[in-house]
Length: 152
Image 1 (cartoon, rainbow, N blue to C red):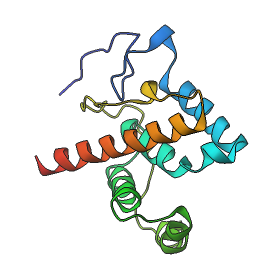
Image 2: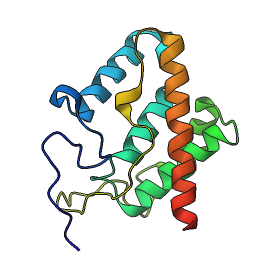
Image 3: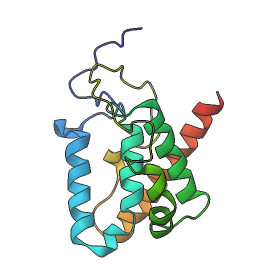
Image 4: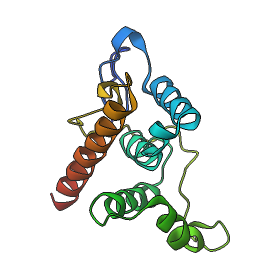
């Protein structure tokens, strides 16, 4: 099935209406810059990367996306810390041990069809408290939608 052409002001992955035509990737890189430069923003970096990647999976393989969903669940539901994740997953995600690919070079892959309830455009960056609260909420809502979609 061929996806209809998205309007120029809509993200082809998450379906967010782009305010002032600012692409999601531009917001994402701005967020990463804030996280790297400020420890108060950094505390949710793992959630930012996973949630953005799940909602923008054009370059992910199916296995890559599913593994990211599992990891997000481990962080949110199981309370896994980033340090614990690095220890537990290092052997699993190592290129030497992994038999599947995380990313694909198939840029012609069909766009996702999920209409996300919250997207990167709704994250407040005025201070670290709002930012972390919104990133956690975004991750939780995204995980819930993934779990619901997988059950359907």
